[in-house]
Length: 115
Image 1: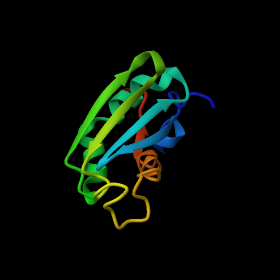
Image 2 (image 1 turned 60 degrees about the vertical axis):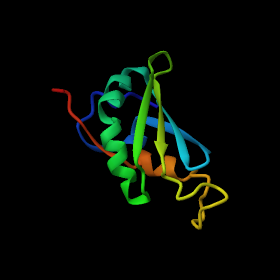
Image 3 (image 1 turned 135 degrees about the vertical axis):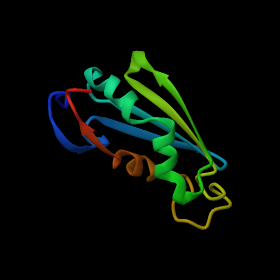
Image 4 (image 1 turned 90 degrees about the horizontal axis):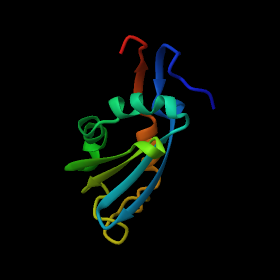
């Protein structure tokens, strides 16, 4: 995968990063890593707590905490109350929240070299 830093135009987060998901109760853990370390700064700018909370608001998310992992060109996002009760309490088909990493990767971004 090549760096998207020199490309302009609308893209999705999945163009520059991949993600993994985990859960504990009604809390979702999303780890996001840039494919190319040159895109890490852009990833940090784009994937902020308020933007992630907005993206998951329809699922009842109440808080997002972001932990940066610069040596790994990634971050860990902890999202509270997003699993609608968790594995044992949710009526939705994805109580574990595994597909929510794909929702995050659909986040639109604009790669702008002037930024």
